[in-house]
Image (cartoon, rainbow, N blue to C red; front, side):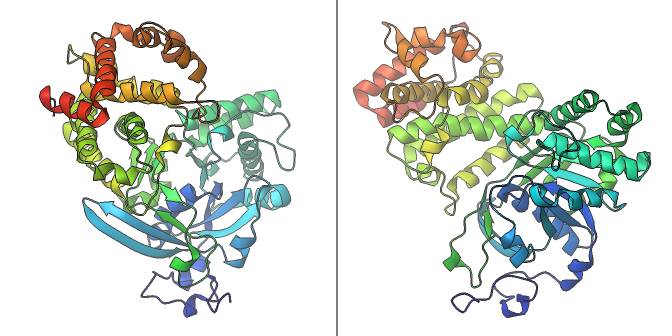
Length: 490
């Protein structure tokens, strides 16, 4: 007990008020381990593990998760003390309605350290009930490495997974029905395809037998996936009526898009029947494009305006009527309609745009615009610029909202210093352009920064230059009003 509060664990569940939080049934303790998960982070516990826990409660999946702590940073002590139970608080807006829910998640059976318990982890590869492998070790996790699968533990995520598959292959004597459904959730393009290529390359480098290589390739299902949910791993202790050092908070919005057309995958991922926000589809490109453009590009276009306006966090953006008008302009009048050329339906784009507004307004999350501005130039390049070919496929004049966002980016880059540079790799190059007689023309022509000359987009440089001059004369808010209302683009 701490401060007369019970510490969350199976033994202390009776001391916790079930009217405040949903308490799991003891029967969940008997469910077998069907999932091995590499990563203990908040995103995994707030999305895949949430789905699996709720599916277990509904009697759909009936399996728990063995979690592998891959790094030697931190410890597994909290998981051991709490029997791997943790609280998931869900707070925010969904379809304009205020949502609050609380549950004690019992999806995780145990957490093992790769550094200290690798032999025990490999033993679980012999279980016929183990069917699914999930990972999230950040984007840096899916890389090749030196060392071999016989290291204890292997160095990289790919080598760890390869060692696990090799132990399973040998125990089940190459049984083609004993492969795993492998779903990385790292935020890289084609994450499963990249992981599979690395694993197969490691097979050849380490001269593993051809029959095993064939088994990896043919008996296992590597599924590209996209996860989308904001999950925070910090919950103020005073907000809980008990002690829980593993508590996390998530927004109501959730998406897990999994790429597969295999009936085997559908059958093994039976928890997907729980929630329509789990999408098992032959191609997840549509979901990536919607998220990258309507959510991420909108973040990027707004962050310069917010910082220049002295607005610190995302949720405050909507308190300014002019900025509220701006974000709706780029969501519903520019980015959304542009995506129609990719095969995305108007209803899909509009529905997601409304969820973006709900998510931005969430009063329980504190996203700082200064953090969103990190690597500002690269984010403009990867998130915003791909919208331009779609737009110009339908229009001759540039998109006004995008031009305003680009102008705000330039103004902010003019103000950066070495101490406050947003960690932007292109800061020096950008500021050299901004010292030229025609700074916008010079900057937009730089193919090293943008991968192409933005002068190819008719009228864009001219509009950005005009907006910059107008901001200097009239101020940011007046300029936005002038362009969005006088030009009747709202």
